[in-house]
Image (cartoon, rainbow, N blue to C red; front, side, top):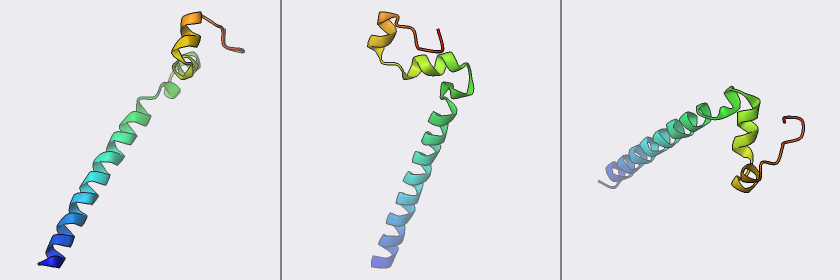
Length: 60
């Protein structure tokens, strides 16, 4: 019974890890790094920098 319970717990942990890994892959695939470099730089800037309209050296 104890081994059965441990096996079930391991199965649940593996399932959780697989779901987490899939979410990380989706998040990485959605990064703007695959597109325009300006979009990437703008996404990395804080809201204050974007609101101030400060140019990013080498980009604007």
